[in-house]
Image (cartoon, rainbow, N blue to C red):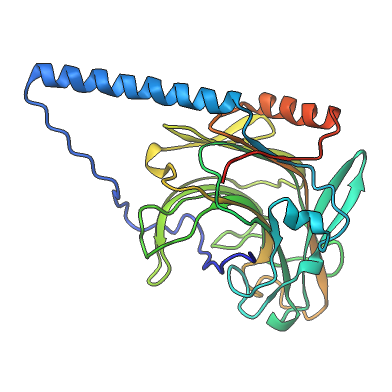
Length: 325
């Protein structure tokens, strides 16, 4: 599976008037009925927590240390990933998603994945990079990674409007479909989407319409540099979505943005447009990824995430995936 083209994106803050896509109407005129309803709700909540605990105890998790040799390593596909090569959004129309722009190297004791985006100022010269899961099977639980964001190119002039991202999403079945879900960490080192400088967005999507553009989402942002390595975590339970950076809570988003269907996991780096830097001199940007972790149906703290990653590494485990399809 090479990944379906996705239409993305305007600035998360360009939001349409809020729409309540989930409407709940409850009428209780009898005190006894209200009491029964509350009791049933509490029991359902207890049952849900029990089911989550049982699944978590079963150890359903994905961990990948990205210990591969190249983009063509057969283990990448065998482990459930695709290196994108098909055309389409997001990014510069006419740009290429190049498998060769994903490489692997050793940093310290760990293998890291590198995603390179390069351009010489034209669509034909623009190459972007994306790694995505082959299956949409991830929903509630914990998503975590360690990512090295870059504020400047490794070569050539700076200034391109770049997006460096880690996220989960599913397919938009129809414009404004209420079963769409997406959860993003997106770092823009040179601005874009109306921003003029570096900014990090975390965004939880309920739905959107590509044309005319309309979105229902909630976002948290920080307008500062995030250059270098950062631990990023987001958790989804039955009431909230929480985003963490380097062990600190970054944003909490509301229950209306909880997912209805399973999603895929993605890493990518791409250019919003070619207007930030108009030079025709070649330049290239790197985004690095140390690992990815998903723990099904359990919202871990950042400390628990680190302990789990340390446990995998101390045991010599570079890959595990027992999350059911």
